Length: 331
Image (cartoon, rainbow, N blue to C red; front, side, top):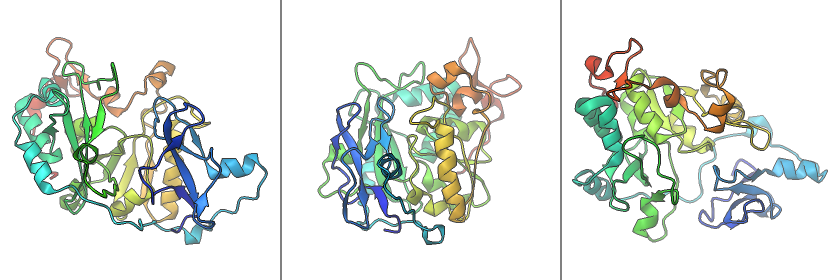
């Protein structure tokens, strides 16, 4: 590894008790120089929304007055995994796309955009129904070489377009349910497979898969990808090295001394040092109210306008968006 400290990737499924929420959800930091874990409390909780615990090696060193020697900038490189990723068989993807099952998320898209736009989005993002929960959706992670990394399964309310979080948060993974032997997960950006045929389009990255899909219609002159959460992996940016990249983080309250915007800004600064053409948008950060921060508003919450009677998505001139639709060819 080119970084001394990194979240343990050699044992991707090994989790420890989080000192904040007391759930077995802590991914600990590994010291690549000493070849062991840092202190028991140094790590990041996977329950980012419900807990948000993240105690870095630098914070630990500072708190204990230990000299922290960072890696020189001229030695920072994109770190490739030592373990090759496992890929989901394409037959899983093809079978899911052929299912004739209720898909609440697709129902929500049709309520916004009607059939033609929705069918175009299904084709671009390979949006498929899941049988895990009635009405659930598979959001397939397909990389730049059209290899399926995994599929994220989520359940949405077809009327509101919000994720179903009661009585539990409905999220699961295809690789987990399939119980694939010796599966080594290496995620990629959702929508990454679009980049090969759209070399001149800037790349926009948001947190939510839903937002990436909606903004593809609202602003089709950009390629919209999703990180799937607030965390950004430097490694995942490698296929985007020669592209113009704009990050659009959600708005939120400060957690561990940083807002989502500040966290992505820090990551962007590292990527700039690595030679990336990357910036972080302040479009919603500057105008967000306290209530919007509490609710974690994202770009779609600001930009998708709906007719109060029909529920259809509207243009800035307040007529139905599907009236002006031209087929998008991002896949």
